[in-house]
Length: 113
Length: 114
Image (cartoon, rainbow over all chains, first blue to last red; front, side):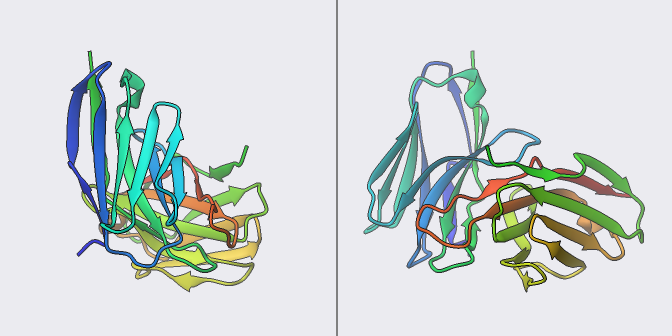
């Protein structure tokens, strides 16, 4: 069973609309939780990074939240743009040195006109 | 800007060939990683290294080996390529420790084994 599960698997929204992507994790304890954006055929690029003690972190139109009690995180995208079409990956980092990461399988987002 | 550079974007190799995937980072990071990414499976760790000449197996090391002779360079080696190694390969680097340590990824190498 994957320790980091994301939903939905895919999502289509109209340009300008908001959306929220979900991440449930069982990895515990963890050092930090990250959201990455991966364009097709490219490597992932970091959007936000939160430690276990943080509740929210924003990066422009992207806002991530973290509830350590329920082991859930969400990524909210405001006023979506066509360029937001990508895979969004939730990643949990294990504590200690070495920085080992546990990846979700991603949510494929498509923004249409 | 941190740069993680993979030597090739696309590769096509024949079954049984020895394949080298190269990765170079310019931020003096201690950690370097090799992942493969397949549809529906997400990124899976093949090997990682936290220092020169040090390596540790990840979740799926079978059929792969690695080399880290210099801090900035981490190579993934497919000793005898097979069709089930057709995949997207991603290299990443990060500092050794810290709560906000960031992992930076290369652009990926799409390997096709025929």
